Image (tube, rainbow, N blue to C red; front, top):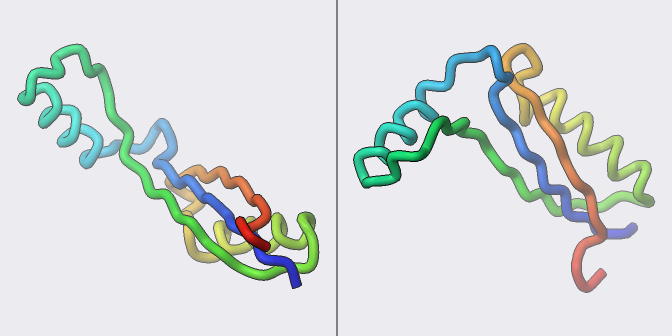
Length: 87
């Protein structure tokens, strides 16, 4: 079985209020970064796993996102699956 690395990015949908992003923007402005217009906070996951081939790996990551990593009601996700280094 081949090893893969998935990098999953999860962010709130544009219409969803992002209080964490607003707080970060405020902090950046207080630190002198006055040109910062907006910040959207999110999550990044790096997952190492085994799968027979690229198509299977992609299917598994999509299922991980749908079932646990992202809330499809309020979050969008994207991912990239690559062969694990040294595999």
